[in-house]
Length: 139
Image (cartoon, rainbow, N blue to C red):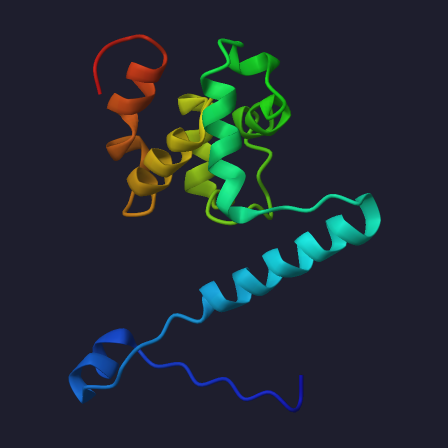
């Protein structure tokens, strides 16, 4: 894009100069989400309320239905196959290595998984959790 200028600075250099570092990735992702919700409304007549998404998850968890019979089951099964290319936060090779081992069945499983994998090697950090998830011990 000829009209676009990109300036990239090392975070340590910015800190040494006392410049505020702003992560604008979140703004881009929020724009993508807003557009996706608009498209869902236009094409499918569905309105998504972000403030209620976790309510749906809690309702499903409290319904006594096994996780694989809930409306969200296809999403979890997709992650069990590591079919997450293009899915924000869980598309890296490290995440794709961990997901089939952890086999998330609830939203909070993703919170834990991302927190474990983001700092480093999933083989080193994630082994106790994936073993506990498989019923082989405590995390």
